[in-house]
Image (tube, rainbow, N blue to C red; front, top):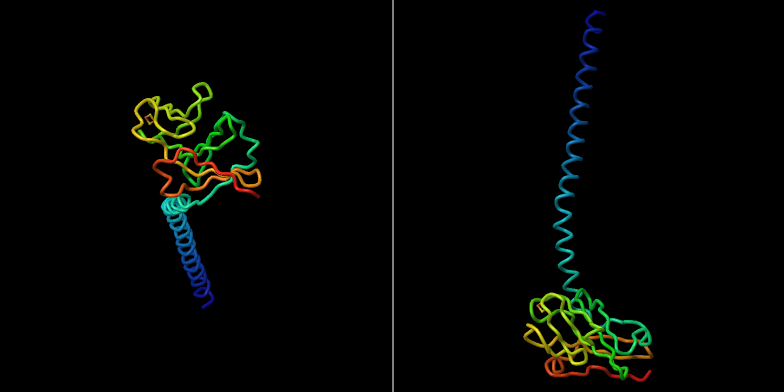
Amino acid sequence: MEDTMKSQQPEESSSGFQISRRRFIKVVLGFFALLWGAVTTFPIFKYLTATSDETAGEEVASVSLGSADAIAKGTGKNFQFGHKPAIIYRDDAGDFHAFSAICTHLGCTVQFSQEKNNIWCACHGGQYDAASGKNIAGPPPKPLAPLNAAVVNGEVFVSRAPAAQSTDTDKVTEEIPG
Ligand code: FES
């Protein structure tokens, strides 16, 4: 009788150990399956999130470029308008002119050239008048898309140009009294 119990106990113990081992393996496999799922779906999630962020960036109404004094006369600088590159130029009279910095040829980002005193595109040598954004040399087929630049209490703000101004307005600077 005692021998019978002794011989059964290890079997139960062994059986119980095997079950918990299977469960352990299932838990580990389940964990790795979840991890794999998270790793593979995360890029998709990020892609979808980035798309909606970009859409939101396109809807940016206005950005601040800080103090007007920080931009010297006769210079220009690139900045981000939402998720899009943009450029602002301050002429010798102190007026600001802002444009999309996307070249109208093949979409490279343009920049201000101190040497040429205009906006130029390094990709194929396209050039734009810094004050008007008009294409003046090289392959760009049309002017840069204008943005509206305004100085409020000494701070430069760039916003979307009204639709009516977006085709033929050269100077988009206005001084708003504070
Ligand atoms: S992309 Fe700018 S000149 Fe070609």
